[in-house]
Amino acid sequence: MASSTRQEDPHARTHPLKVFDVAKSQGRYLYACAPMVRYSKSCRGPHRSAAPFVNGVDLNCGCPQSWACAETLGAALMEKSELVRDMVVATRQRLRDDGWGVGKEADIENAEGKGRSVSVKIRVHHDLRKTVDFITTVLGDEHNRNIDWLTIHPRTRYTQSTVPINLDALELLTNMFGDKLPILVSGDVFTLSTLPYTSHLLQQQPTFTSKANWLESNGEPNPSIIQPHLPKLAGVMSARALLANPALFAGYETCPWDAVDVFMNNVARAPLPLKLGIHHLTEMCGAGFGPDRSALLNKKERIRLTEFRNWIDVINFIDEVKQEKGLKPIIRSDVDL
Image (tube, rainbow, N blue to C red; front, side):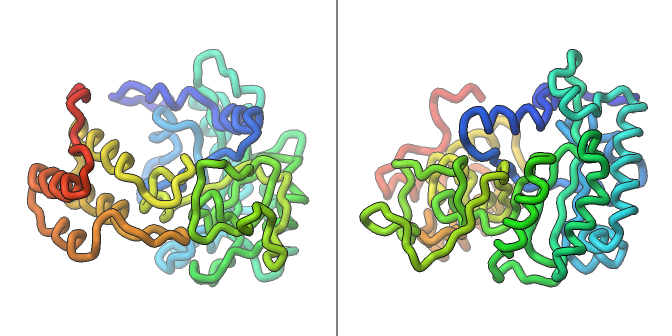
């Protein structure tokens, strides 16, 4: 097994398929944060290096950036279904050889907590028959499938993020494959109350509020908006919207001050590089991606935030802003730093 100088992450002992099962038993979607760390530049098997600290290994066939596609990475792999199949099969075998449990459902309750998943994130083709063929090839025998679960970003490699996701493609693919393995959707997950589809796992919560809720004031759906029903979709994944609003999956339409406080208290415990931390703060304190475009800090205040050169000044500045609004300071007195 690949050696490590660090102790294994205890959170990595929970198999992703178990998380899917828990979410389903609770009658809700599984909520996933799109990965912000990549190992594509690693010359040594990155899945082997990461395995002690993660729940699973995912092959991203969805990145449309030119540098990735030029190296036959990311979305360029959507034209290489047999190669992707061989990659996930080889990854599963390599992890097995290293002592990890890759038996899918059989390793959900791995006695040593060494169950790991192997999954793939994809985009779609203009011709959806190619996407169906791709998934069929990568999946393999559905009774002994090559991947644990699948994430679908229903845009093509060339579709801009400003263009809405292809709901017809999402509906078709979840209906075809949703009984064979868990499926997540990535794309246009900006708030839980404005998702462009319905499901028995997606129920309107009374605490959610929105300035552009798709429900009429009497609680009835707006008949002018046709939303596909996706009973076989297992969960949703968000990326940029979570950067702006880490409380998205808690039902908040915009980032609350509480989320900023939690972030800053975590920074106090385990400091981030200043520039990186300020980047996260400007994202959280700016306008998000939902219909409510209000921001915790105005543009001038966010610019001021980027001018600070140490964490003390950052904390003092945000505390001053919060004090003006009658709010409590960032660093709580009950936090054990």
